[in-house]
Length: 96
Image (cartoon, rainbow, N blue to C red):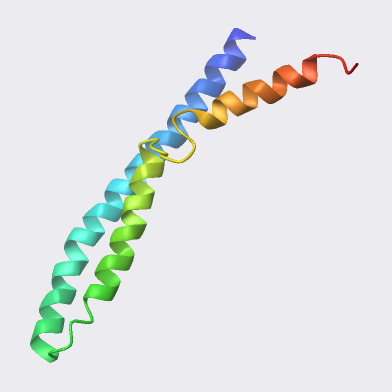
């Protein structure tokens, strides 16, 4: 039982590290691509179309970071774990 629990913790930590790594890769791409797009935009036209991809990708990056680092302002920290424990406890109690 303890080995299974340790394996589950390891797998969860591994998924979280993978998500954090993905966030950093996404951030690095953003910091590389957006300045290139700004340069292209300023050299080709007066319309600042670069704001659209910068804001959309920036919002996506923010959401990715919130997920990667476990920040959820709506449901709170560890909500999912608490809800799983609550539902498991409810299943263990016999119905009346």
